[in-house]
Image 1 (cartoon, rainbow over the protein chains, first blue to last red):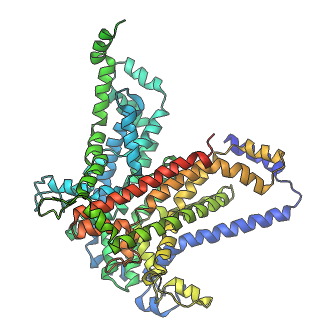
Image 2 (tube, each protein chain N blue to C red):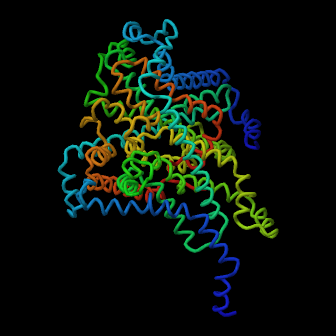
Image 3 (cartoon, helix red, strand yellow):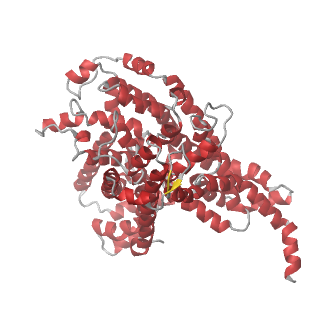
Length: 302
Length: 303
């Protein structure tokens, strides 16, 4: 706020008005470049939209920059029928919600301990947790797979966790470096006096965590929730590894199957891509500031 | 006061109870570290010393898997492609994002919309994006060949052309990742105190001088941060090649280290071999990260 007003008052002094035309010219160029760049960024989305509404004859017959002759929604129906997409959506939503809930609970608990409690090995433990941020998660794919193959599962035909949804969400309940770091930073900004006052009144740490820290940390929790939802929704390699049955698959894997099934059928493929993106685009539009905050705060994938 | 009573009190007093509460709050995280992240790093190393197809018991083979990797053309191609991806996409992504952030760092009308446009690819799945780009790069009716055709450039096969395949993937990845870096740079730019620019102005610094001596040094922590993110991320490239290569599998021109791990571990069930490749990937990333952090004191300005 202060800086903005300072900038406003200083601006005339900083940029002498001797050559107003040069300034207007420069501003026009910057604008033009930014809009051109923005179009380039939006271009693939616009082209996806246009293609998804064209007939196949149009796609191959008319110039690519032409608009569709009419809205051919039948592409959407064909893509929806080609694979069990309703099931894929249900699976993706279920997994995204379970992951989000798990991350919120387990990361906030760990963050609370690191931010407010005193205990032995606090420094080293936090260091190890942060170090896992730089490990590409693919490095531990094999041991994780073997672990889930050993764990017994009462409802699975193989008797273990392979080809069930469990390996795709249970881990989210066991903490994560990104969420813990994000929430710890936020918890550290909460004045200690609040917790001290509660402690004098006889509240134990669990009550302080629940009644003081969590309500105040809502913005940071929202950021973590959105990121976890997004990562789960967009995840490809984990469902590929753990799931075999088609009816267990997620939207993202389902979409990747398209490329093999619909060779050359671009309108259907673009319709599928667009439908798979919709939940993320809606989430992004309504929660844009949380995305931005999350990236600014630590922008790391956990 | 002697040590004895203090210790005794510690075991039962408020601090001891605080520690017990801490372990309660940390229990899920510690379980996760042991079972899913830090522990498995060591497990990967152990498994990499075996030959294991999951059907029979693992057989200890020493360093044979690593020796085999060095003679495996597919692994060497994967390594070459991944390194190519890193050395091109990371600097390109950072430079473009820096330029964009400088351009976007102003209060003009409609700037929020333009920023949104730049950020949209970040939230969309790489799978969906790869499908769209497969269409853009399509040799028959793809828009890229059409547009280049207007300028008389002959049609290219892009993804299925061994020369163009990786550059095409790099362009797509840079496009997708730009928004993340731009946001971090914008936050960095907005944190630079206005007084520094005023001081530079008083000293007679021009536009370039202010950028060179104020903006750039003050932005080095952000550049360092985005650099490490991009570096680690670039070694994980998988989704793009998986989708673009379908149907079929990536050729020697597009296969990557993570694809190699996936293929050997979960298609061919060679757990020991996949673990050896994982460990090589881990060592490369750890080494580069360490070197990168050591370089910090030479070019990153804090404060």
